[in-house]
Image (tube, rainbow, N blue to C red; front, side, top):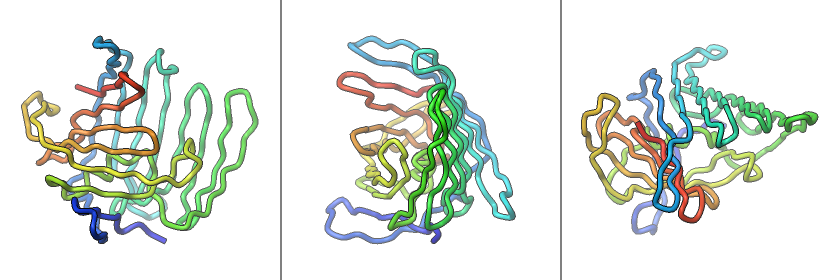
Amino acid sequence: RTITSILLIPSALTRVKTLSISTARFTTDTTTRRLVLSQGGQEREVGTLKNEMTFIDFNGRPAVLRIQTLTSPMLGGTSVDTVIVDRATLAPIRQRSVNMRRTMSLDFRGDSVIGSITQAGGTPQSIALRPDTALFDSNTIDLILRTLPLAEGYAVRHPVYLHEAGGAVWVTSRVTGSERVADESGAMVDAWVVESKIGPQTFRIWIGKDSREVLQSVLDAGPGVQLKMVR
C-alpha cells in the first residue's frame, strides 16, 4: 500500500473526504530552534532542536531525509531522530532513533512495520506490526501539515505509527487561527496556527502561509507546563 491521501474533516464534521497532499514547496534547509520551558509564569532556555532536511535517492526512489538533533541536559542529553520518507507522498520508509535511554530501528514495508528497540543496557526486542491501514511516521507530523491547503476552520485526521503509544494512533489537527510571527530572517509574516492532538498530548505549530515553513511550536507538556520551540 502507498499513502496518497489523508482524511479531511470539514468544520461541520458531517462528512469525510480524501485529500491529496503536495510537497511541491519543500526545500532543503537547516534550522535551529531554542527550547524554552515555561512553568509557573517563568521561562528558561533548556536546549536546542536542530532540523536538517535534504533530498536523496533511496534505492531508486526520490525521498526526503530529515535529521532532528535535540540537545538538552535537562531533557536527557542528546537525541537524534533520522527519518526517510517518500518525497511525493511522505509515506514512511525508515526511522532510526537514538538517545541515552534507548535505540530504535524501524523499517516501513507498505503493509507492515518491522524493527527493534534496545533499552540502555538491555537486549534488542523485536517490533512487528501489520496495521489495517497505511501509516505515516509520527516524527513527520509537521511535514504532513506543511503540505496541506490550510485555511480557517480546516481540520484533518490521519494515522501514524508511534511506538510509545503501542503502534497505530490517530492524529487530529485543526487550524485555530492566524498570527504574525517572525520568519528565519526576522521579518514578520502571516502564519497559520495549527493545533494537533495525539493521544493525551496537544501541540501547536505556526506555519508560514507563503513559505509553508514551521516558524515555531509549543508542546503542552503537562498542567501549566509548556515546551516552546522558538527562534
